[in-house]
Length: 218
Image (cartoon, rainbow, N blue to C red; front, side, top):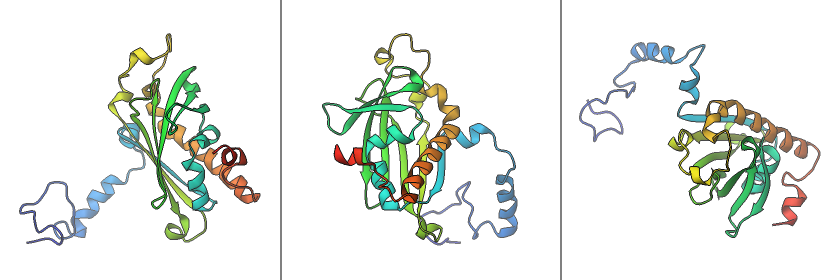
């Protein structure tokens, strides 16, 4: 039997569950097996780390704030001291998780989709392999109320397990960014709460979401 939208596939594909081949009676046990009360940490945060939240703040304003790389100085836990490099789109800061560790950041944005992707790396700015993918969604569309929904995903790049540029690391540094991967879920949740509190405070008090010091130095 030909399935809708799959006319080019001549044989069943293992792992594809559709009502045409798996009626509800067959699919329900599969779904129930997926709905666990406890999930192994590696299953949730092994290859991907995703956190999200609702923020009572206009989406356009929140997007504009996140699109400025220097906002990371305010809402992240440990990135401080942002300064421009010779490449005006590449910023240098310090990640205090690694003591005197340099972190380089290039922010790639799409206003129409309200995506903000931070391409980063410890120690060197030539290969920005740590990519933080963020999207701002108008909450009126997905939650039927004013405000923003923020989606944030990280992928477990293999370099988290093995520093590809050990020669660029500061001497005697005891840690590598990948040492913290198991904490990314909780750490990013903490930072997302920071973002929520900062943005909602400013919106609640009639302040610009992007502070004046950022606007004035653009």
